[in-house]
Image (tube, rainbow, N blue to C red):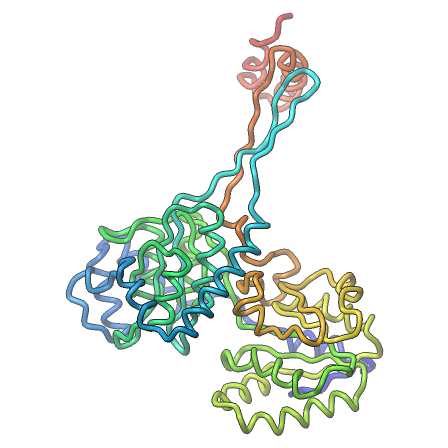
Length: 430
């Protein structure tokens, strides 16, 4: 891992270089994705079957070979050992409970003249969730994407998931059953995103697509945005740990590994206020890496984008954290709630030495779909609110029209929009 010191004159430049990640579209990927999206839009199911067989190594003959029903999902759940069934239900229950607190309700109020104003909250009709199926299986992603949609009141939740070589993962499908997914299509990549966005003979068009994927999925989500809504374009996983030296070094080392093991471009950063403690964590990492099945990925990730930063105190550490705006921030310190007040930009804040980031990934309750690549400066975690929309309510009383009409008339004439002005003036008594 790189070693940075805030007292170094080159620190800011080194930090900026560490965080740099190219999020712009790759022209070649974009060209391929554009062709796939256009083809799916034109040929529908036939194109979807062709791309799935080509990219996933499947041998589907008809679209029915790529469709799973509620009965299929329930059967997958039934095949699992009881402890996994219980874990899935526990995680889903906690995620559901948390997201119920986020649910927005309609509201209205009346002006003194009887004019009613407010907001009507309604769920989206149909959403599509993309669940990755390449390097690993992600039942947690199913729960995190589907459960807030379910809480919001979305009637149809359509899931797409790639199945390389046709291998269907029972835990992923069981998670879909537990989280209330309506139907599953075993397709992935840009073709799955296009099918959800445009609809095919068999895949219904959705209103919004959520969930992470590879570069082709990200490019496809960018391309179809506007036809449908999207949650975000996710970058590599990130963790930033601020440690005051009171947490066992082994714990912090494993927390850093927990994000580094996602892939070679994930980012794990530790900020400490003691060089001795940073050295202790490094020693722990050197020892624990020997036990990691995904050692090669972890080492590549830490070597590519990992770092240890020596800060002069926790105040400075928090300032650095706000600049980094990490996806996951662990405050592994004494009095974490007080230090959390200094954090303005983070996808999720994990407070205290017993709060490992991995608990948030699976079962704590808050969503694990979080803004990456410094977008926590202006973005928020996926939530129930992402599956609801707001309509403004305006009911102007006769008395209110006399006052508002005059104001609107003046402003409309100022914009040279005569019809706007007269529409308001026609309702005036004098």
